[in-house]
Image (cartoon, rainbow, N blue to C red; front, side, top):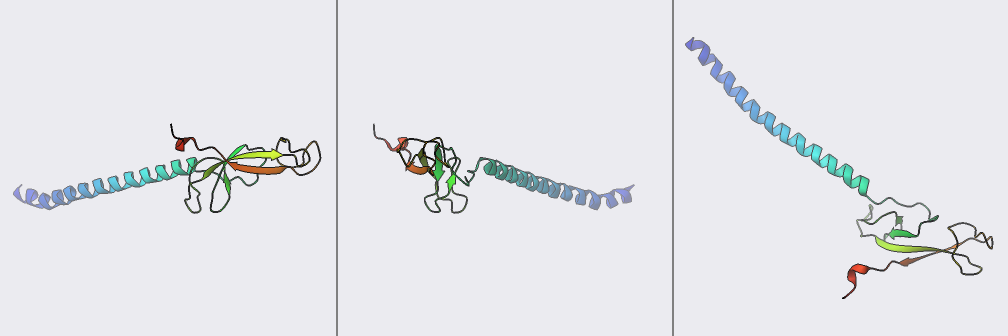
Length: 126
């Protein structure tokens, strides 16, 4: 009986050490999963580039690369903060608003697209 106990002591020591390694591996896996979930959430909330303006009336523009995006955030290319811009579609013949990009329904010319900086209400002084 004494021999059996002596033989089991190293085995029990190895098992106890293995439990600590399993716990560390479990913590590392949980951390990896949490980072992956955060990356997925960030990607889902990231601004998406607009390939061509059609009927958008507000876009967010990167001051560096001049690309337009669908929401506020940072430019995916250089992490510059995007600036809110108002978009207007103007008939070149009568300077009146048109419905969107493309040919003006009134004069059959290409609509002029004008972007202006949106008002920044966060910097107003009261």
